[in-house]
Image (cartoon, rainbow, N blue to C red):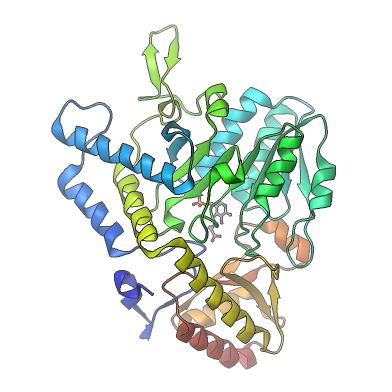
Length: 400
Ligand code: C6P
């Protein structure tokens, strides 16, 4: 679907047509996104919010129009609740730094899950270390499903925040974040959702989820690298101190004292990635033209098809078999090291990811060094899965 809009998919690797199954790491970019970047640098390049000239005004307008497009995409109440960052990692670090400075004290607790990407784990460990607080961890089952009873039992009078992923990048599990938000709120605790692996696979409505923060990256939703989003409810953003100091985030500066700009600029110090933000707008337009339901349906078909074919292979084990999953299939073959599987697949033009996928605690949970991960996007096909499964069948004897 829509393959011909992605020029990179015509690439050959070692003389074989590229089969790109590393979409959870980053998706490829449609021509419309590439064109938006070229258009920005050929016709609009200028610094925003500060120039009195034509180019700066147009670039500023288009930058702010993207903020509105993001607001609509995730159904935030206010445009100023959308903060542009460099990506999910920076979005989470922003909250971990700023929220924790304001609200985390010695002896307090932050709840995370055992299936977090390092980006939604290490910043909380660092914040806890700084403040003398501690992490509480939600366990998960062999299938890769969070234990919600254990989750409810983790709350105490010292819990200050819950931070969990919407979708696990390694297991594909879709976590019941709306329900988890209700639980957190029943204890008067806010919840941050790492949406890096959800935003390109399902409709996200931050008001329906009733989450306090929602973070994602442009490059995992057909957009450019270098831009991401931190959504936060107005009342939290108002109460949080700035993350970085610099240009644009100030109202008034004297040598003695600085007052800060209004939302969202308080959190956007320095020159942002304007071209990438405009590219993100093109990516949102692209996804809306295709339709998120169409994307989700196609990916679900591919995932079911791949899972069925792969399960039939002797010695192949899939990690992450929750009933609610996105298009991620993590697996191991016999005793073969995942890196060897990935290298052999690469020689056949098939791009997968191998290793711990920045989720070492998941690997520890299963007692394995890593997995091979195939992840599908809207432009992948059943024929590609057939080629992939045939390749796995071919390499199995080499690995035995
Ligand atoms: N996961 C993967 O191959 P950045 O790097 O900031 O755009 O996103 C970080 C991140 C945060 N949370 C989750 C759930 C993620 O999957 C990722 C990125 C990639 O799985 C690269 S490690």
